Every structure is written in structure tokens, then in C-alpha cells.
Length: 251
Image (cartoon, rainbow, N blue to C red; front, side, top):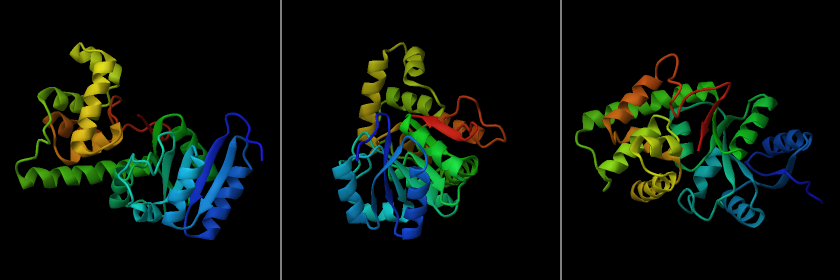
């Protein structure tokens, strides 16, 4: 089978054959998408992704949890592969855990077909995908975690420097690497170097995971402030969690 240039190659992983069948049928009916394979269990998913190196892994969240073979960002999911977690309903713990497991987006299994297409196109273009309902639940979940952390007392510093904490605060508030560099009068390359060090220290692999981790661990007062502000009816235009037509967060 010849794959046309610019075709998005997708692996579908779900225990339910009917879900895999419906998703495959819909995607194959749209130009620009190709199904690289299907899997119904964790080991098969890991093997298929390693062999096929798809652009997108569309995976049931429960199946994603069963993988647990390597940390997010490890060799299980090769660097180009973006992961979209499929959920049956919007639950706080599910949304938070999906991103901490390395997902680049959350999509409801009952979403209309157009939303599924939008979510895939968003993650392949370097965005994080959340629909507005998921976004609201995520913000509320993180506010609860933050409140619990504040009551718990002193926080761990993870060996982060003052400059690294300042950069984390900027990331939580939605700044790009260029904007962080301009604010601190450093190059984008230096910002990337700082982020690499930060990722290693706190055990995350991307900006969204870092923002979630920073807020849930109260790494700076500014991070907490950014989250509280994001819980208002209209999220701040500069927030990493801001909704657009559908919420898309640049990596």
C-alpha cells in the first residue's frame, strides 16, 4: 500500500473492537489519514508503536495506564509520535493522569467526528488538545490539588535554582521561549537549556506536564496566581490553559 506524502499515520489502541472499527472507518473515509495498525492490549500497542512509528497514537486511557513500561517520553513513544487519550467521560483524575502519562490531548469517545479530526490535526501540528469541558475540569482539579498542597505545608524545591523557578512561572503563565528570553535578556537557546535541566529535575518531558507539575506542587506564588486567574469565567489570553475555539496549547 502506497502512503501519500503528508499523510497522518495513526495507530488505534482500544480493547473494544467496535471502537477501533468505528474510528478506523471514519478516519479512512477522510483524505490525509492512514491507519498504521490496531492493538487491543498493552504489549501489542507498545510493539506496534515501536515498529510503525506512527504520527499519532489514539489510545484508550485505561489501556494507556496499563502500558507503564517506561516513563513518559521514553522509547515506548518515539519522539515524533503524538498521543491522544480517548476517554468515555470527563473525570478530573482521568484528565490530569492522561497528561502526566504523556498524552498530548484528551478526546471523548462520543465526540462528533469533526472534533476527532480537529484533535488529531492539532496534536500533529505541535499543539495540545483539550475541549472546553475538559479544560474547565482540568483547571478545577489543579485548583483542588493546589489547595491541598498549601494546607500540607512546606514544599519540596527539587533542586531548582531561582532562575529556573522564574522560568517555570513564565511557562505556567503561557510565555513562549522567545518571550521568556526577552524577559530575562537571555537567548532562546539558553531558555531551552534551562528547560532541559528543569525537565530532568522534576521528571517531566514537555511544557504542559511542567505547568501541571508546577501548579500541583506550588513551585512559585506566581504559578499559583496564574492558576487562580485561569479559573475565572474568561481565562487570561496569555495563559497556557486558555481555550480557543477548542482549547489548543502550544508546546
